[in-house]
Length: 446
Image (cartoon, rainbow, N blue to C red; front, side, top):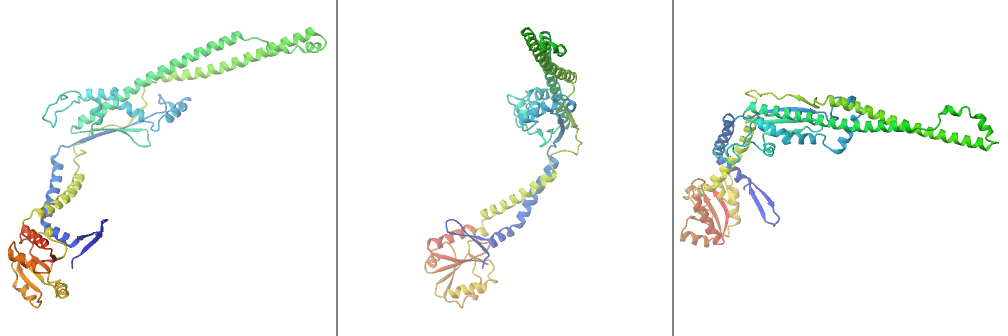
């Protein structure tokens, strides 16, 4: 008779969902749902034009991480430094984010833009009211955004505020102080590098001079005229001794020459590095940070929030939720009979289901079936069921006669009318039937 979906839960009990009852419950209150939905949607659309507008100013920075100079592509020592940086950190810009978020940058930004703690809820002063924002509070603020673009050397900076000029000034201030910090770091690094290399260079030059001064032995040319002496060494011990001394001096000369060559190569390499260190120091005032997207003041219509499209979507979702809740609340609180008060076996239209209902009566002709009417008994309806001798009619109510009729019957069929039968009385009547251990075969809507 009714359309049902049956699902078996883990406890082995049948859990029945009457789709038709649920559909009719919402359909009967469709006008209420439409009113609630439209009112909610209109509210969220309206606040788009009432709420304070927020503007976002953003900027993108390219950070050259390969070296302290922008000329790293021609610096023969840049590759070595770049490789070390990659090994140390998976995110090459992680340290740059920490620099931007450091008090060395943000504290200046806070003071330059006079960012202070406001009153709580705009009206209640606190101990912090009027004080400069702390760097930690500024970073945690949902207004500030500092992040890297994945897979790139680009840092994105954004700030959101109801004052678009303030948002612009904050982003500009962050960029300015970050670049100045970089110049300071570059200058210190270049000076430190130059000092270390210069110290090593001077030490290597001193070692070279010492080795040159201490170099001994004979040059190669000194052995060109020793042929006769070598021939005589076969017959004379004094010749043999002379040849041995010459060879020792020659080997000492070769050893000194090799050591001096090594020191010369070392001095040459350090001299090259020192030359680059001096060049980097001269360029330390330049920054390796390039602003590839300049911050701009948004135009009046370029506000970020409230967003009409987002508010419309939220309005649709919230409208559907509120409409659903309105139906449930109305069904629960309605003093008249509602679909929620009905049980499982429901006959929604007796005319359409008359044959099926008669089949039930014929099948149970040996049982005493009580037709309990929660409304006045329709004459036409009573005439239809006169042929059935096992049926008795009674006006349902909180009375002794009705209780006796329940006890003298085998099964009960309840007749009621939506919007007219009192829901409280209907619940009491069903409870009386249950307490008498009788079964309600059907609940018929008339």
